[in-house]
Length: 640
Image (cartoon, rainbow, N blue to C red; front, side):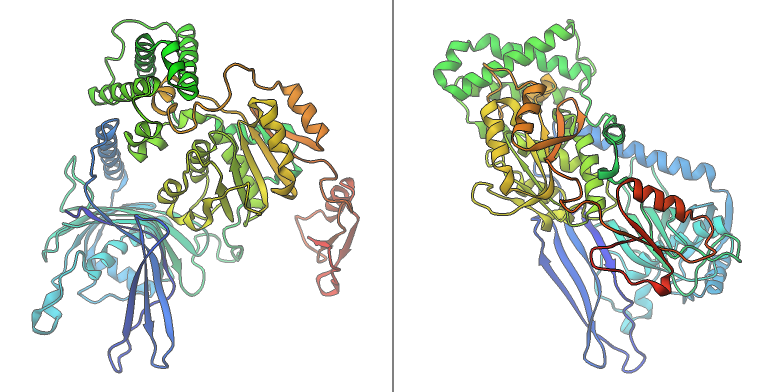
């Protein structure tokens, strides 16, 4: 059974125009597998009369089918949240959209902007709008009536209907800026979903809820949610489009003063330079985005987890786990330490857990049974992982709470260097990499935030899982064996490297062949942060094998002493257990600060050239000032 079709990362390069003579065009639609097993990549190409092929569109597509197994943990909760979100969206539109339009007015104003639609494509019937928002009623046209012999091939949704849905950006935009002087055409779509059973019957209506946002003088983005006929509480959208970007053709269209030219920069995005910040500034910036609660576990669920962990310890003695083997014994001590820490930090009361859904309690009980089986040697470490859906990995992000601050730091590095190369290594670095990528995904606007991202955790290889979760990044991610691979990186995240002196010494001694000149090493110490995380994930391969029992982790002073001894200097402490270091030496290389050439024309306002010179010279950079027509930059010179 097919539920629908998902498309994402759609790029529209150029219009496919059918010439009047000969009235036809050769088109090639190709479909090939992408690095993810979930998505396929499609391209649409056409050949011109001169025999030249042009790519008009490309993107990713996947068929949505019912899940093979139900999500017992929070499947119903997610469905309920989706319904609530749809109800909230519709209610918000209904409250603000008060300006009414007729169909004639819509297409008259389209024509004035340079867009002309024939009767087959002019399908918007009713409009209610507010600035940057509108509700429209779009009729499904009888396209078969204009085809030879009244016949057309079967389809899921006809281009005329889809085009009518995308036209709904116009009333929302026009209500905000008034007259729209230039035509807009779609150039990209971040994500689109089309239901398989969307109605195709001519005369039926589609209700669209469209919001727009101005990106700059030329581009706008739109989000469109479409329901069949009228919205019924609990119904699923027939079509949903997010991140639809429209570009204005011809000259700019702006609601600013007509005598002022718009800035011609394209989507300028400023971000702090991590190398120019003080440690205090860097910590403040990274911790500000790390304060969001990305995975808070409800107190009652934690209490249930503590109860189940204690039951497992009651049934398995330490001697029994020791007889099974070293790993089972380490796992027993890990569960014991988590239970003791939880019971001393919170008072558990009888009758708690009333608000936790029954299916979640059942899932936790099954996890406890698997855990008990590992403690007595009756279950392998992979059994517990296979018992959970892959989606569950992403929902237990409280396991590694500091990774949001690390993701912010990595995002700032990637903003400065687009082809940033990243490596994660160390015990439990697989799980940490998943959390780091998840945090990073919330900070980007769809662009790949690095050149390469390699994981080296062989105990918990997350390569395929991360590629499936982030298909647009798949080409930049992979697994690397640091012992045999010769690649070097701009930044290396070493997780849990300071849990023992020998592990830390081994990590630092190998950095010289992994880090590029000026590269950064981020030392991160992570441990289970909640009983629920312990219950679900402590039995993953290698999770309990880290030598965290029987010896204390290295102190901060011991870490600093070893770093200094091996030629590293601390750049910043992002958090209590996260330290950024790099090779000792001048920050800007052995030759000192570069010469700076400031290019400035006379008569410029709002620019203090003298102040800019002073700032550069305070940093030790000699400066020169020249007019543009006189500029002769020398190799190695930085131009401003």
